[in-house]
Amino acid sequence: MDAPQPTAPQRPHVLLSAAMSIDGYLDDASPERLLLSNAADFDRVDELRADCDAILAGSTTLRRDNPQLLVNDPARQAARTATGRPAHPLKVTLSATGNLPADLRFWHTGGAKVAYATDAAAPALRAALDGLAEVVALGPRVRLAALLDDLGRRGVRRLLVEGGGSVHTQFLAEGLADELQLAVAPLLVGDPAAPRFVNPADFPGGSTRRMRLLEARTVGDVVLLRYAPKEHSA
Image (cartoon, rainbow, N blue to C red):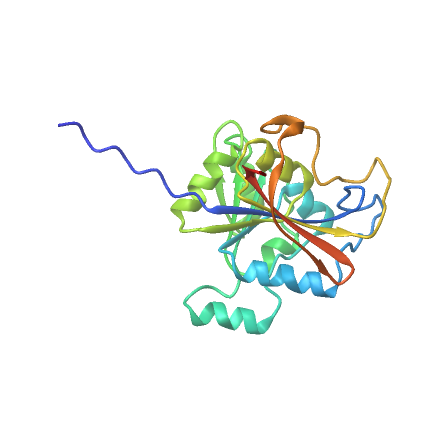
């Protein structure tokens, strides 16, 4: 009798979330962060965070914006703890180089953190963070499929990805995003030096493949668009 094959971990549902200008930018090129969302949309994202098991942001986003990536509403924190979950989701990042300074707010707020790195970068990153986060080596490169498998083994069922552009691009190009939520702000940036929502890539199906629209609604002066990237429109 053949030995039973190990069961593959259940990967989390991956939700990409971003706010962008009408011309597709996540920010401008100034030192100060451009606030694309409004108060109502920030609250919507806070609700999304509270509903997820983990939040991921790439290393460039951490260095550029220095976010905390927390559930901000105390009532939502209390609702999570009442069901046996931590007040804040697991915080996740990834870096091929290990260039993640230990003084970033990401490491010093909220609960547990995991940093995924290459085999080459992991030892130095562990030493630099000195226990601030668990560092997981994923091989010669940081593969998103392996990252999702590891999160699945940790019990993560919903993963919220908050950028930046290179991370969004990679999830979409590899066909690993289950849902996309875009808040489109009534602004034009027009600066080629500014970061964009996605970068050039070989996306599944090419330029003629239409994603299925799940919802379109206004949130204050922004428009929320929800798409299912893995599904085709009729």
